Image (cartoon, rainbow, N blue to C red; front, side, top):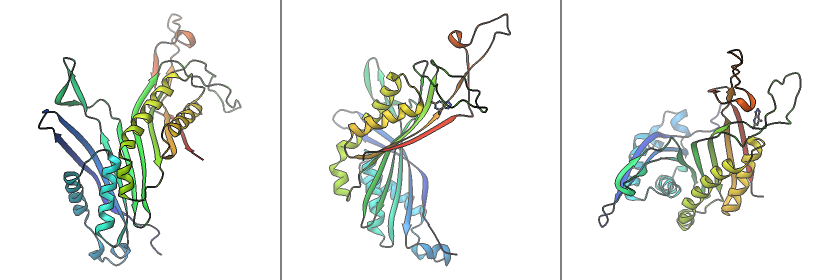
Length: 295
Ligand SMILES: O=c1[nH]c(=O)c2nn[nH]c2[nH]1
């Protein structure tokens, strides 16, 4: 037997950082969950119990806090790249660092019509995610993303013309609820190193705003013939908006809402055009996945 692959590190490193503007008194907060998994000449720690090659996961956790103190933690693409680059530059036997940064939402409160200087609220489980792979001698590969953006539209969605055979019971529909929990990602062309990432800093926030706006606008405005076609359009729009992105991917659950036939009760009409009360389904759910490449 031989080792086919090995990586180790610290998961679920919770980080909060505050930025205090002395002049204006405005404070800005960032909260994120960081994962670092290292690869390299570490096989003997598995095969020979030789721990001399192990940068302890506790030390990795310490490094996350130190780098968060010493560097900006936004945009997450920059922080992930700084953190990963540290490991491959500090430990000669570590050749790849896989860094995941999940940024949670703290949206600034608006009080009496004004943005509050130091109060925030968690408006949803949605996160802004970054996965960076920093490889010695190769460069920095980054996939940015949106996870947990739960959306619903009460109409403007159809599904018909699908295969009908002895396995089919689903009725064709021209007006249905559509709800999904967006998991979307966009992969950047490889960055040669930190200088290239730093040069791209303004593009990261803009890309996230574009991807989020395009996702919601397309979802809202398309009279969707299917999840498949609508997500394909989202991908194309993001590729058009962000030239430095090589491909875009979506993984969309179809969170079903079933009509409830109440006609057994005094002939109550609650199906088709009369449907108002539905049963939201926790499962099973459709799951539609797609990756669209620029070329
Ligand atoms: O948008 C949809 N795509 C599908 O593939 C599917 N299958 N059942 N309902 C569906 N809705």
